[in-house]
Length: 569
Image 1 (cartoon, rainbow, N blue to C red):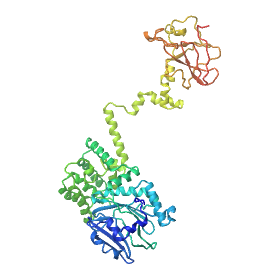
Image 2 (image 1 turned 180 degrees about the vertical axis):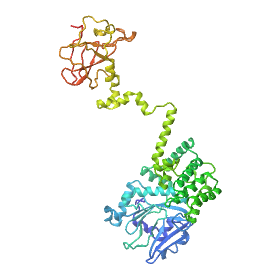
Image 3 (image 1 turned 45 degrees about the horizontal axis):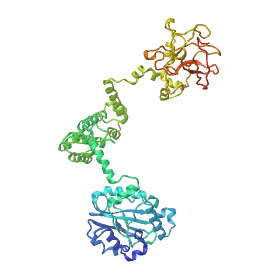
Image 4 (image 1 turned 90 degrees about the vertical axis):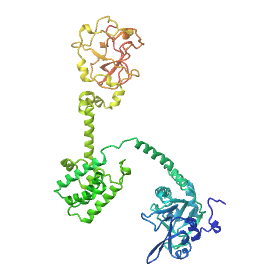
């Protein structure tokens, strides 16, 4: 027989099915804290709490009507902010009647199906499974956990309920004060007996169960969270507290509150009086010793909110005094401070201060977020300027390429423009300014054969028409061979059969002398000339190898057209 999934018949050998046996397993004799019971009658509800030894003898009376037990032991009555004595289990209230695929199953089949799905999720078997009359309770007993671990218990409880949501787990059942029906009672809604249907009542360590739940849910375990917190703590300890000290900051807040009072005519209007006085008392809690806050805040209240009831004034000031008394001696950040560290936009929201009002009154701290952002950016610009930085306007004035944006005219992005190497080509203005014929003695002549930059032999020839129109080339050196970027530039028309005079830069140094490290394509590699293909109307860039002759490559179609060179047959 499977001991992990005991059948219902196994409970004939155990005492878990009886109300006393079940509560003895959950709340053993001698346990710390008190067991809370709740009884519902047509006239009134009764709640009582007993020590564990005293609850068993009275159970026979409680199970005669609709009664509930609390899953947690409190020091006294349950619920609210009352102290928790011990946490006893993780639980899930499975409203299986709300799930269409489970609602039609018989009780035994329902228990088997729910157990199968729980195991399929990777969760351990519940210590006890109870038929509540319309659904199921699944309880995982844990070693008693002290009340100080309530937040850890709540995190694991919420995660467990989220995991069991496909089984109809009630998302509201995540609190420690939850009450469940006592086995042996009758569910008045369905007129069915509440009974234990599966389980062995075994307990397990909370940390092991919680880590297993977290891992199955894809969340960090307690050990991993501790490591993260320690990392943040180490990082925080190495950093200094930024911004103004609290006393200086709230002194500015107090000045803003006084400016607002004067702007309102000397008295704070109704609707913001409590907020104004609360902020005054809070600010004084940062500036003065706790014993002096009451008198000074009362003086501000007499001036700003004379119409506010005395009870409200005293209660507001008293709350600020209590927080000031509990404040640490040395400030190490808002995390360990009992006083309220309001942000400027939060205070502006409470007092109804907009941007226009903040600018008109020259407020320092009680300002909306957009004004705070603009002021911060202005300070950053001033600091950058003091370090010698340029403004955006000055940068664009000095960087004309960013202002003209030649890539926009080509329909490409700035990064693509640089990747294609188009920044190496002169712009239209630069080409026009450089298209000035040099003196005859400065001309290099036609391109020699085999990469030799010697004087040209034979007469120079130019394009027909008025004047000599020479094509100036630029020493563009693409990284990957003669890949031509598709750009449009205006250039001379090249009728079929015409000859073109191409000028190339003169050698720049000894390393550029003829034969100095030249490959078969010449020292300069590929050069460009701005021409227009005779077969197409769009202008294109022609790539020319000076060592192999003039063989322009039309980028529009990828075909080549060989043009005769001056001085060659």
